[in-house]
Image 1: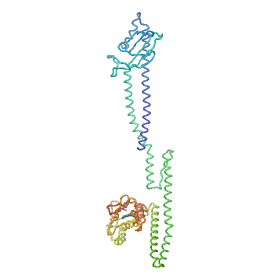
Image 2: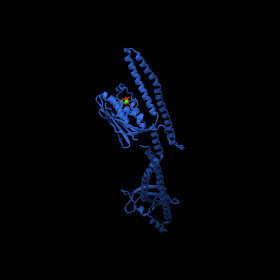
Image 3: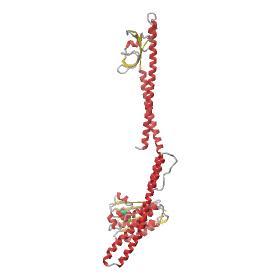
Image 4: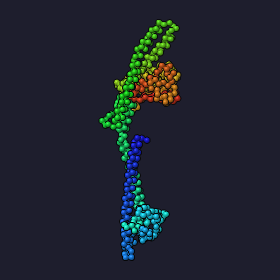
Amino acid sequence: MSARQKITLLITAAGLFAALFFSGVTLWKMVDDQFDLIDDELKTLAKRALAACETAGPNHPEALDWLDHQPRWLVVSEAASGQVLYRSAQARRFELPNLPKKKITLRRVPVPDGLEIERDNLGRADFRVRCRFSDAGRLWACVARPLDDMQEEFWESVGEVALGLAVFVVVLLFASYVAAGFILRPLAALDRQAREISEAHLERRLPLTSAKDEFNALAATLNRVFDRLEHAFQRQKRLIADAAHELKTPLAVLRLTLHNIEMNAGEGERAELSGLMGQALRMERLVKSLLDLSILEAGDSIQREQVNVSEILVSLVSDYRLMAENGGIALHADVPEALTVSGDTDKLYRAFSNLLDNAVKYNRPNGEIRLTAQRKGRHIVALLTNTGPALPEEEAIKVFEPFYRVDKSRARELGGAGLGLAIVKRIVDLHGGRITIQGIAQDRIEVQVVLPAA
Ligand SMILES: Nc1ncnc2c1ncn2[C@@H]1O[C@H](COP(=O)(O)OP(=O)(O)O)[C@@H](O)[C@H]1O
Ligand SMILES: [Mg+2]
């Protein structure tokens, strides 16, 4: 789940919790107020019924007249004997049992037909009952009213609140999603910029603002991480460059000395010395490649001029043709004239030379090499295929890494240290181009170089 979704859910959950609490309190208050109103009404009615019964009797039988017009359940009795003095029309139809004296209660009782009281499917209805004594304590009255409309209103309100809550949740979800996006926007920008820096521009830094928020703190921390990374990278590169530089002269001296010794050596020692010289030469080549690679990696731009790639390729083909034919390899080239790019002639020469070198070196006897180049839109596309060992896809990405060789023993035998393609890739990158290598058949490898045309 994304951070945005999490924040959205959290805000919505908190909002829903608050809304539920608020609705609960409101509903409870609503019910409570309604009961207060009902209780007041019942109290007034009980008081008046008691007063009427006090004054009624043989002298004033009309005092009870208005009671008969009350639509409520009403019973007045003598407190001491319990003898009923008056029952309203409803009270004559059904009983409310076990009424406690001087109290407010709720009763659910069966109610007969025809009383305009709403009943449940078992024929029962809920009543609010209030009982009280007369002032002198001689009489006792109980008044009740059904809760039908109130219950209905309550459930109606609950329904409305639920609907309101549902709408509220939808609106809140939307609003919090927008808000979460707004909150996280700096983070998305930070992520994009940090990725750009880590992938391609380690020298750049994240922009800092004057805000004292967590995003700014994170950006500052990331900048410190980039500082250290860049420093470590540079130190590592410098170390390699320095080591290669320091090794260059002693190796040359060693080789020359071996050469001099070889000149004056006897027949028996000569073979051994020439083996040693071969090793020294290999080391010199490796050191030179290392130095070249570190120089190429240190710079991030090249000196550009109009370069005729066709000339470079044609000249390389004639250089390598002899070497290829010595190995029984046929070299076919199809390069049109005047393909030009803007770049560095020596570096491009070096890159294509490395590629042709590989195509010959890793070929098989009686194999072939095909080189084509053409302009495609705003690019020059050079395609070099050669027969050779299979190149699985997972190896194809790794061959551009320094010192990576597919078949180590064979490559070493052929004098390669695994730096050639790393150098080629760096040169192509510096020209703003692209290089890929892939096995296109069981025994065929294709290298494609795309360079922006001049
Ligand atoms: N044209 C090719 N055909 C077959 N294998 C190749 C080709 N080019 C490169 N490779 C493989 O990629 C590895 C890396 O190449 P590279 O960097 O030039 O190193 P090196 O030539 O010093 O061994 C080689 O060892 C070889 O296994
Ligand atoms: Mg090579």
